Image (cartoon, rainbow, N blue to C red; front, side, top):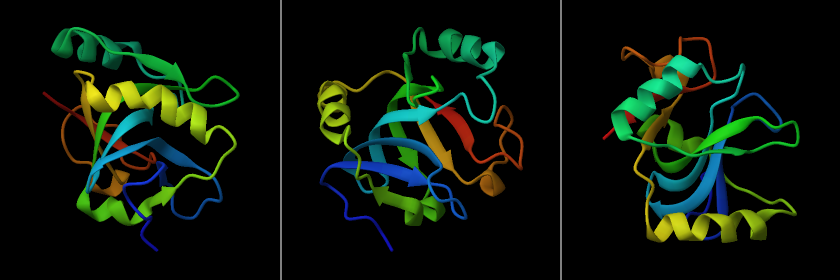
Length: 140
């Protein structure tokens, strides 16, 4: 079932799991969110990869996303066509806090845009290896 878009906080669900997600954010346009995409899963983000982002874009912002401190990168997200079916409306006690924190980013988008798609679709150099839950590529 496709999540109703345009209202509230949305997240990209991992099929076959009860509550795993790749990121969450506010609707901008079909397949586009501004929010936070998980970087520290299944392991802490590689410092080399973060350095590449800093060299490419000049800056980035990491924020804690989970109670255990796993971090994500703040920015616009392009959800690949084949992965849009996994967007879901988020129902959580912190929805209002998350929404309010992301509203400013919706008006003034951060510099880094991340493309989100299933790992099976990941094929470009620099992407996380197949078998992990998420393929991420940089877009200037």
